[in-house]
Length: 317
Image (spheres, rainbow, N blue to C red):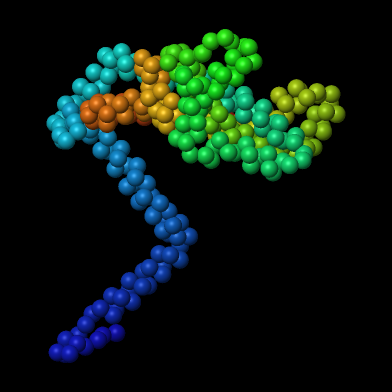
């Protein structure tokens, strides 16, 4: 099909338009093509929000960039300085201890809370909704309430303990280095506990009742049914929950920053807070980026280990 213009020239646009339309129709006629078309916007968004900042962070970590200065390439100097820094090594230790303690508490308490919610009969929807409140309230707001509770001068926790005659002095929850770590672990556990409990509860609901009845008929008691029925069938769910929680806990920023800002004596600094202190507050963009990149291999190790656990858990008999 050809079209003539006002001066008599033949236009070739119509056949090209028809070919383009036919090509698009054939492309979208294939199922895989439709899948690519739906995934493409999300992929481009992730590319812009994740890949670009990551590449920029890698460049900053290899330069001596500061606030207001682009910096020049210095290779691995920033990483060598960090490995020789006592504060960074303390931050590394803090991150491991913080993640291990908080994750262990969330696993044990989350399982206990899930079992409790599973057995509740009346008002179960209301109670399950209330359990989610710590998880859905903005982190900075809820952590600020915890700061008021543990604030050294007017701590409601200390007032309660003294009123009950458990102690007769003010406990320095936040000024003391070791108690400060205990406090941030406690708040992080409180914050992440609903995620564990509700997810494990969904796994408990999916377990057929017949399996418990069969185990009971074989003479298994409550503990036996828990270890031989509940735990094996919850392993896939538990592995996924631990994976996500480990990532979120290791990269935590809000709770530590609101409560202690990394103090006292750098005893609660995590990778995120120390990177913020170096890069934005201290103006050393290069070293701050290097700290954040140290988090990347640790997360890779966590993801690798957990994915192996998920693979093993999903192949149970």
